Length: 212
Image 1 (cartoon, rainbow, N blue to C red):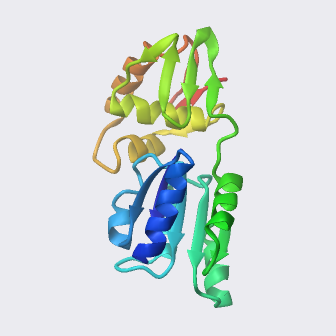
Image 2 (cartoon, rainbow, N blue to C red):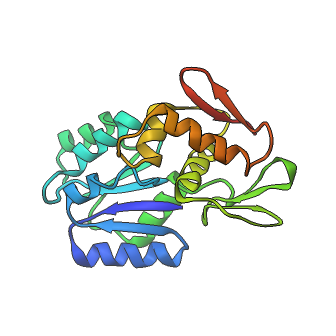
């Protein structure tokens, strides 16, 4: 699982980072809100956002994420006890709120509850398996995927049996860079050759669905 951590206290940031990496998670940590915002479309499975950070606060980053993805888990951490702040965090779509100071164990439990995937290894059709943590596809041996193929497949499987729209794909696979629907179609055409037959359904004029 890939996590974005935004926390401007260096010591706390490093403590959280080390604990989560020991759990086997891939973590990108930031202390500056603007830098975190620049990276929110890099295929994360979970967000941990502090509110009071330099440049852009966690609430505004929360709003930006929710404009593009209504379901991805977001945990807000903050020393604020202001009820309006907490209310705003929930109104803008956070899944849970953890007040500082807290034990790292408490944070870990919340992450496992909110963000952990049901199964690390997903069994697909035709003898394929997919490792949700390593983001690797296997059919006996490792199937080689490009970075964009990996990002797209991970999003499709994460949202299995649901339609993934063009805008969502552009945001996460192209990481905010400019691309066209033709670029998506070309990528999908390449990916279809490497995954189970008939698993990827085209939803005309909208996007794609990975059927399981």
